[in-house]
Length: 76
Picture 1 (cartoon, rainbow, N blue to C red):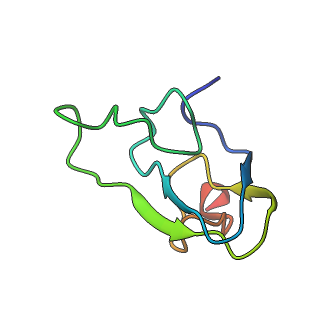
Picture 2: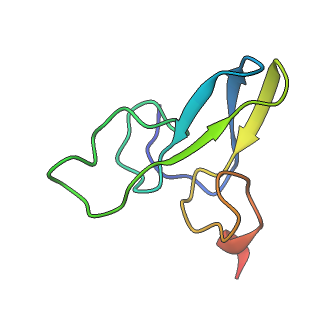
């Protein structure tokens, strides 16, 4: 899986479960954090709890001002 990309990436989430969105772009499991930032980046993952069980599309360029959702920042 690519690290950073300008396209939102899918993540299967389950209602009530906690997830960590990758804010550094180093994760091999983008858009979710795999801990690759430790020792390599000052950026921290953004934790969120899934509201529904479904596939969500999360920011993969890491420039979003509304993480973990894509807000089109990669187009600016």
